[in-house]
Length: 450
Image (cartoon, rainbow, N blue to C red; front, side, top):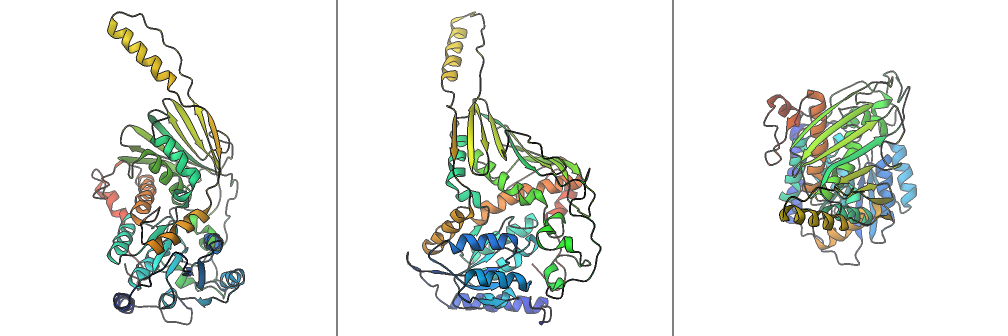
């Protein structure tokens, strides 16, 4: 939102969406051929937005024609990198009014993902929206429904879904080559001890930042530099913390590999145990999900000690009855399980038959292997552009992105309620904990509305 504009009222916002939706309905979609350039607008150009910009600038058929951010230095930096004089905005609604725009890339802080997505749908634009999809489960469901209702192409920025490396690793797990997966573990390990992000005092925002617009639908709070830019992830008003920041990548990959899109139950424990700063999220966390078929999934966040918890450098591991797969940033490794020969006295022909089957199972153990590649965002950007042209479903379509995001969001609810929560994925409710259901949504600050 431009600092020179008055705050949008509920009636004005609804009118804007209605007009945009009517315009989109009356205007024919631009039919793109394989060689046509996709005209992009970027909403949010901070840390992740800048990374997304790099990924799209590598695509020969992507043309960045507009950029939007509340912070002028980000606009200046992006414009210089693009080099073709894109139009600049501080109000994303003005960017969405552009008729010569095919799609938008939304890389705002998490609490600002939903409103631009809904407005882009109504304006007839296709959407690449960063992960996590939403700040709460109900918000994510509304985003999924809007994309379907307006028939938009949408990619959620869980970019490892489009990585050939991750796809190959997931297929090994899904094929059964590792045997039955009893446990999948994921880790975010980084030593921030002792002072973390510190204790900066509240104060006045810099003159080039519209603090009220940055807060948007989040509760009104005094400006604190730790609540802005990358460090907003340490505060629940704007983010789900490292659970939804790194955890959504890992849970999405685990769900893809297991062939499931939701857990049966979740619990979590943790807190600020060692680091002295003004964060709200834990510095130490253990979350545990149960998935269909008998698989436990854990996410471990250790921010006061950086010693590896798994094969050094591994972020995710799958422990199967026949082997283990370790996923690192740009590689994975498969380690066969050493299954001992078990000798039982044969009491009957049936027992001898069981012994033969056991030996045959041992011979089917997977071979060790190491595979290198990359999990760069460029693959995800490429998939999105191809789908904008073909109108096909993206690798991480909104329903997929919503399900993976929801798995992490409900873990945060389990942490806050100190409960073991059963999860009904179809109804998107906790059948055993009515109080926890109240945390599946949150009220927007006026004048913003869902």
